[in-house]
Length: 228
Image 1 (spheres, rainbow, N blue to C red):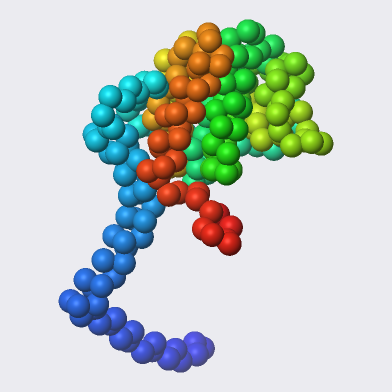
Image 2 (cartoon, rainbow, N blue to C red):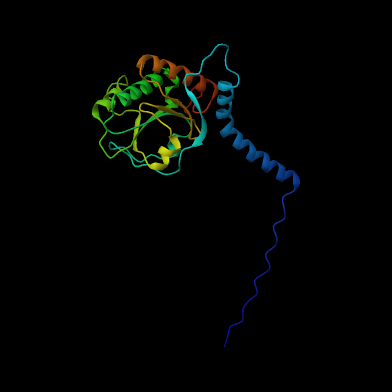
């Protein structure tokens, strides 16, 4: 004997949004997108389309390509690295084997000096070394990269170490030994610096380009009396 089944009441259709409410929702979504994208776009436009009189770009502009969403294994006892960690600030990045030859050591030095030169704005700049083999990071390179940081800092203070994979290397190619990439706050490669043979001059050139980008992009800037 089967028990009687109560018929489920018909679900009332959800009324469509009034046209005015639909337009407000769309404007809200567009505003949120603009808040994220416009500061980076403004830095690109001011840096390349309306350059100051007589200025020379030191870095080579690249087509913006998002770094892969794959998570990289950490190196040197550091945690894994995901692209999301790079978003929201400008990042200086190199790829090199763990042994870190002379070109790699110079690049690490130039990255460190260019970041320190930003003074109060240097918290808006990150540094990453993607290690292209399975070796242990060279202690001498880490010491050089950390020199000039606060007393008591660890050897890799401020420098993120991770194992590169094929997808990240493909997104960054082409590269020569010692190439420094600049990653924008959206996680895209946007510029590279190939010549670090003269360490001091290279650090000054990178610092000037970075300073202009920080000036025209408000992302990551700490408000007065506040936190980023």
